[in-house]
Image: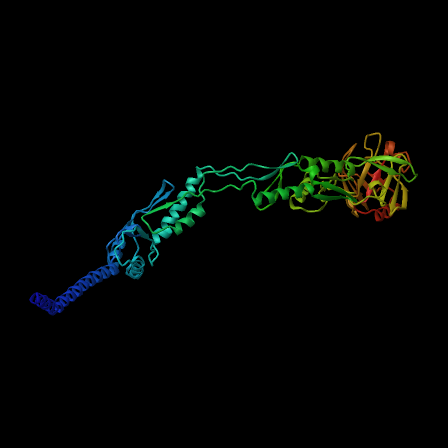
Length: 482
């Protein structure tokens, strides 16, 4: 038994002597494995650092496994079809061109390569966008202009949107309904075009011109503007009277432009109102109430003297005043039976419109009176137009057209078709040629001379007083004949 124990001890000692050799071999194997793995990882890392991963694209051009130089070369040789789609509709097929990359763009390609780098190969899909350093003139200008023109042509056949608007109809403010259209919003689509990736095809989402909606701030402003129109009043001054014209009474139809300018569509009520004012104040063609030298009251019809509003022109002024928001208007379009269609007496409101300076002519009394500022300054007997031949001096309210001294009267009269007579003083008051003048040839100055031996229509004044008559008459002075 002792021998057996000794043998076991020897075996143990022998086994311990052999262990260091096996241990040394294991370390060599481990080191070798580490070196191999390091070489493999280094190779992978080197490859990954210099090549794009799988499923990597630049501007939709597949650059998987390519170096930066190879990727740039592929981009430079890639063709852009330059087809433009809006939604699913192809609206333009431009000419084919190559991408405009140059060698200077290599650094940007390398930056993309670094961005996509992973230590181990990756199969994750990724598309990078890269714009050439040199602008693509065809893409940025020519094709864009063609795209803009194409959209403009297409819009001609497409339905335009209808904006909601505040309108005044039948005196009430309403808001019309907005309606969507199919026309493209060209400016917005061009903006999206500029932001689009540098790909072969350009695909844009449809953008349509949107109508102004009923609750839009613009519509609310239009509504407020129309309400202001209805609330607005214009003070219309005619002579010394002021008429307050209210928008709500006169305007029943109007609209507002995009820049908030009012347009009135109906003018009938304004016309009627101006006509009403004209009828109440104008004197043209009406009878003046005239108090004679004796205190008698007579009705004498306006003839050359008198005025009226040009209703249509005045209505335009009021129309514009409401549209512009003006607060007051003074009548300025006056007409009448004057020499050139002008009206006289508009500025005169005293003495029932005749004023205090005038000439009074009585056919029955064959006499005239001249007044200055309400005071009689002259009176004399006269001879008026010959009654028996119908050449009576015309009754009515006239005015002094002009004055001449001396003057040659020419014309025709009953029994004297052509005459030419020299007078010292001439002051006509009718467009037909009647007026005041001296008559040195007259011998009959009786109060009944006018019946059978009167003038051809003029008022003959004795030569001895004609200068005084002439001096006391002024152009535009009323002449009242009754």
